[in-house]
Image (tube, rainbow, N blue to C red; front, top):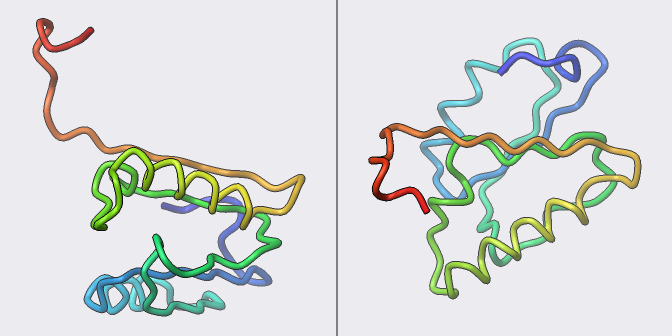
Length: 106
């Protein structure tokens, strides 16, 4: 998604456990300073001192890990907070592809 942090002078770092996802992002990042690498987000460190940390798409509801699911979600939120500098910004996006039935909403 285009945002004010994108463009010349900004460095973008991303990672994914799926090599195919990394291959898909490279053509979309033409002209950007982009560093992508393969990593398991539940196991490996995310780095520190980022101005912006984005948990995009359905990341928090599609975690593939052997960990307890709620513990994995909490871990990802903690890692995102640690990766962001103190005055930085965090963005979480969620894509809902189905409309919940009224009876399923508590």
